[in-house]
Length: 79
Image (tube, rainbow, N blue to C red; front, side, top):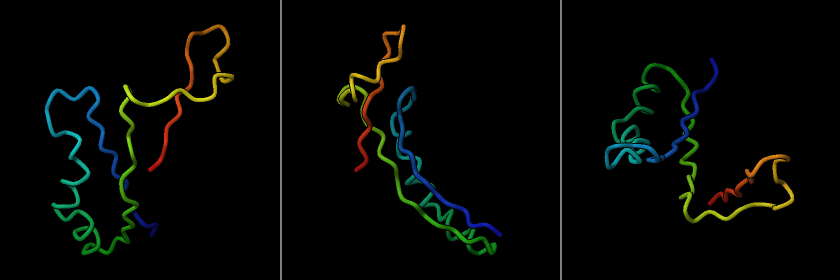
């Protein structure tokens, strides 16, 4: 059986309630990994991804502008 990888993505963009970005922590506190392991599933916790705040992220390479569009590709930094 293939292992299950847990990846947390704390994202509250568009959420209408405070605290929705705490979802990954809630799964870990609830013992999801331990419960899956007790069922015989191999679990790999890959940690959390960083979701940048849109208002503070910088734009990437200005040469990578989509032709015929005003869209630019934003740079996302991993911490």
